Figure 1 (spheres, rainbow, N blue to C red):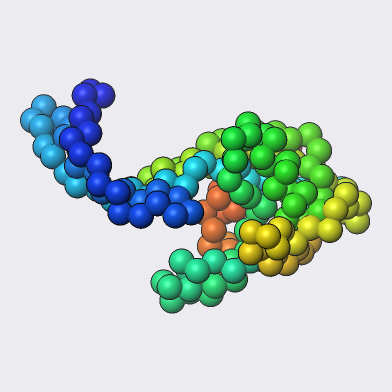
Figure 2: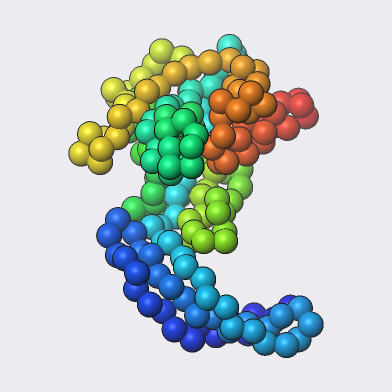
Length: 192
């Protein structure tokens, strides 16, 4: 494969919270021929997420907040997730720490980078840096709940790690980054 990709045109569709553009792109196919395709791409920046875990009691901190796209797709609008947010010009680890405090009130300790993941690479540019960090149950440094100025209304809850894993299979947790981080923690714990 070659990186010989030519952007032939970009048409602005909407530039509000993010950028939504229509691209006409010419690229080399696997057989060596060229093709031109049109793709609509949404860009609102990249993000960072952190799974807060307390090893002693074996608990995690998760959040629940309103998400319009799942609702529009016929699913529950209040999604269970690990704290996450846009980088806003910060390095991913700094953004992960900030978002954990804003959303949960807990300050992450021993922040460990797990992986970068594209959440929907067919149409969205967002790349999410995912971290694992420890927290101490009951020791908050802030109120949590998100920023009202950003329209956030976030419920924070603590549950056993095994219960959180079970919520993937039951369909209660459908957020990709949260599923990936819970699975990554399960793999790490299995190696101990």
